[in-house]
Length: 164
Length: 138
Image (cartoon, rainbow over all chains, first blue to last red; front, side, top):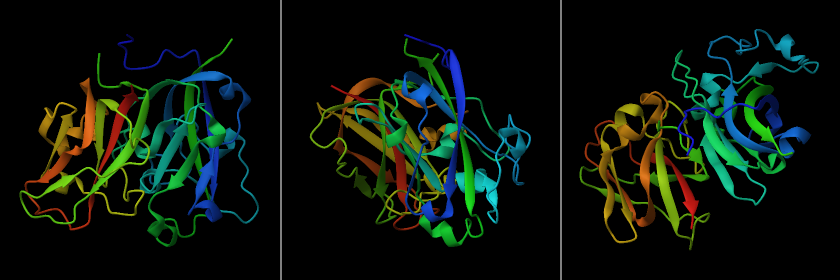
């Protein structure tokens, strides 16, 4: 049994999931990633702003570090505490089993206001990213907290081990 | 060291509090994902509004102060109380440094497991207790 709190990192990769306003009421699927598709995922963690201001997402200081360019006329926003609690994450393995099902994404960093921890939710599964998605659980916020947000960038760091 | 289990499978499940009278008991509802299956639970996590505002069925999640008025019981397949009236508050992992409560794996019978209201002062009718069960199938 592995008694450590954290997965041994052989590889990790941060995936950016852009959630567009028109998708707020439905499901936003993860983009396909060839490397992760051929790997055993050991853990996941979200990376988002703990600042009330937009854009400061450790370990990235500014959006430009990610080479993200806002589409013209779109207000891009980083996932942050007031928004994160509206969303859940669904991870499905290659046998269609639910590894996480509508799991609050806040719990992937255990964020209390200004109190992020380094805990990582751990698995040992081959994740099918194309069937995994982010869902908006609190739809009442589309016209409240999420009013005026056209695009929400959510960052997920996957810890994984490539299948040889 | 324990507290961050490797998740084999997990699912969220909500218990709607249709009354907040002290002593009221609410059984866990049927869940289509594990219907007809024996599941072995080894980790239980609960949430408050601080982490997630609504459940997938659009019920408000109990507040942290409301959570203090709830206890939870899980029974196994021999009708033994494996987790008996543990405070819901104890299962909120964000209040426990991020760790998840782990248990010696037991065959959980959700229809015999329940949430009990001890103090409804900070609860509102139709709020939901919201859990994540970490389990494996047999």
